[in-house]
Length: 266
Image: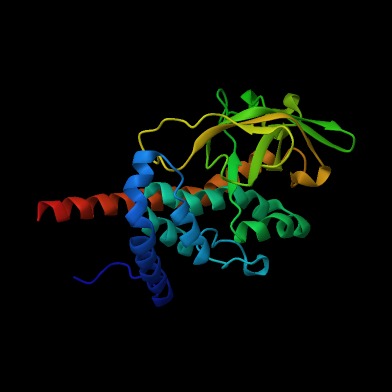
């Protein structure tokens, strides 16, 4: 029976390349990473050296310029051997996509370039009592001295503490509900940024999931992505682009589990 779908040759070559790297550089440490709940540094280094940790970054900023299909192939093949490691490229795309969609040329140069060089980028939307419910968002940014003061916290943030950069959604005008949400780039080194304890999870144990705290973090005006009040719409556009990466991750894990079961049965 003829296959219903075949990847173009360049994507098939990418799959074969990522699979070889995943099996030789990532798979050997996968069990230890999960058992010890430690960040897969070996995988991070291997992916970075191969240009796969943030392959979606445009070439002009030092990335590979990979399209959506290329990125999901990378994530799927890494997830096949280690779910935690697949979150490195997945989270880097999720965290930086608001910057790609709404950032100025100067902002992209400032943060996409180091991302392509190995600095991680996480995404801070969810809170204890607010996720997609913008009206319930308690993290806020208040104008001060030509910039903003950010206060609050975000929950369940993937690769928190490992990433250098964070896209943070905050209320800048609570009276406007979802139209009063704005997006900011926060750096790990900013004064007032701290991290909570590692969540104890059933899976993805090598990818740290932590709370991120913002204790009166002073941000200059150029930290805002897009116009004031457009953050929630930007967050939803970001999720539209990145849901497929989580589907690819699930597919890769399922493929890996199937192969382990098949080999065991033989």
